[in-house]
Length: 76
Image 1: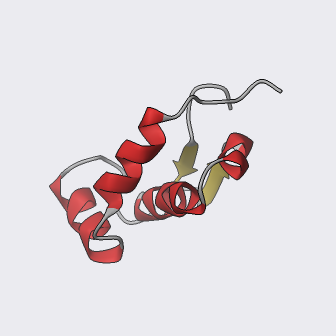
Image 2: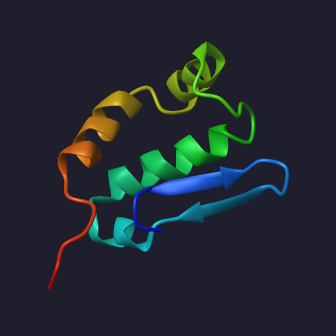
């Protein structure tokens, strides 16, 4: 996975996570995991999706912003 932090196949009930998340703060991994789990309830990024995110992780927007400020990967 080169361009996304995670993905969810709701019909197969399968979630994929970018391994680069292991190099990020734990709250970023928690955010992506919650985001993808919510896709099992709502496929689209609509109001219902955001309501689920607000319920399960009230500070998800701050975590998203933190993650988005970081590079996708660090070259070592």
